[in-house]
Length: 274
Figure 1 (cartoon, rainbow, N blue to C red):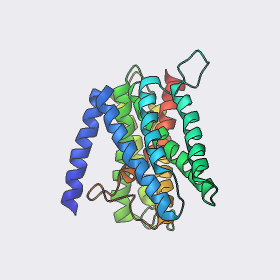
Figure 2: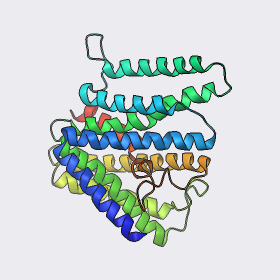
Figure 3: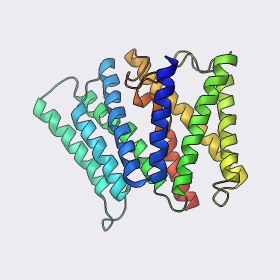
Figure 4: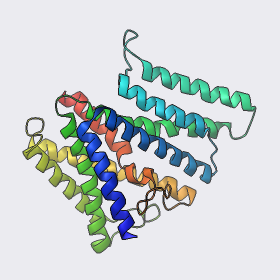
């Protein structure tokens, strides 16, 4: 099992890092693929838990949200601004309600409405911020590399330390393997990455204390995001969101840490640094 896991990590990591380096369409296609597969896994988990939804509408809407964010940003502004993304949200509500009306009265209507809507925003809206992060100027490429390095190093460090030294569990009913020892080690690893980037690629954009603080907040949000997806999997009685990636589970398993961290990270840079 180790070799398929290693190969999947190497190939997937190389494709993702390459797309971040080149940005634009290569990165769009990678994010779009992640969103489509992740949204589908979300709806499968929901249905397995007993919450029906309109997965077809949700998956199409998720793709349109990613494309709209790529072309227009979020655009919640004056009527003179381009508001394609916000218009898509209104259209999604119309489609969900119209689909329910066509189906007729049902005890599952509330679930179908809310789960479909949540799938689009939990996965697509959250991960679309990766595109906005890469498009930040100046330094979008380096800023994006920092986000991925923070989360990946935290995850690897937490797993390595937790599997060997983890004695005190954090949330055993949700994620039995997560320990305080591993989590603290992961946050320390993330802080070290923040310091490294501040001393090299992002010297002009970040102060040392700011880099450490940002790394710790991203690390905490990534941890909370990971636990959030674990809650969904526990409810569905599933160990992984799917078996798509050998040795890694599903796409949602690999990118769950970004669901809360990416939006915060983008608005931090957009509001405070640009």
